[in-house]
Image (cartoon, rainbow, N blue to C red; front, side, top):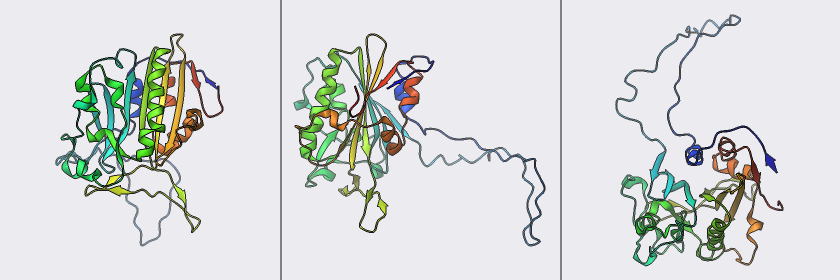
Amino acid sequence: MRLRRSVLLSGASLAVGVALGTGLTSWKLKDEAGPKILYPPIVQAASEVSLPPPSGITRFGLPGLSQLKTRQSHVLSYDPRLRGPVWVLEQLNGDRLQGGANRQNCDFREDDSVHPYHRANNSDYRGSGFDRGHLAAAANHKWSQKAMDETFILSNVYPQNPNLNQNAWNNLEKYCRGLTKSNKNVYVCTGPLFLPKLEADGKMYVKYQVIGANHVAVPTHFFKVVVLEKYNGEIELRPYVMPNCPVDDKIPLDRFLVPIESIERASGLLFVPNILKSSSNLKAITAGGK
């Protein structure tokens, strides 16, 4: 399908646009015009007045904000409740995929920029039966050893089924790298999903496992939204979802394409409105689409 609207282009708009929900919302109480309401004698209605926010409301700081972390070659938004990222954004091209960086020189390590209460460590994964699954793939950043090293920080990692991580998901990562040969740029946004499931009592529940002493969340699914910037100016959108369980790697990757709206609803993120601010020529590819 094609969505056409007038826009401005900015390469960083996807990264900023995906990070919705960051910041504070100002508030004010206002007088309202309208019919008078008679209250019961016991209830005395106070007149609403216009007040500024209390001047000392942030005296002791704010308990939390979305944690945006910028690495040398990827950007992520961290969720301290899950002990992992909400999303991770990469920009791939031929130059970044080439270089002498070697994953044999890399070690998984905890993120020292995250409070100890809210971060995973390697002991959480030990004996869990899960791989430490990269969201920004190490092989996407061969141009710099530092950039590759940073993909091994545990804030870029979730518990991932070993069969999925080493087979079908790995194939999807390779496919994304291959797309750089025929496109000007390939933007990849990857994240976790925690999808509801119908239980025996007929009700829907969101249930997910946690591992380790730090209760690292195990996603039920993973998404990967691939945005292709073509040489003719066209933008192509390819949204994928895979379950966090063994997946037959012989299943064509196109079978995992989903409507972008399903990812937006499930993740709480928005992609299409932000892309449309950058291009009036968007083509969305979903299962069965061309």
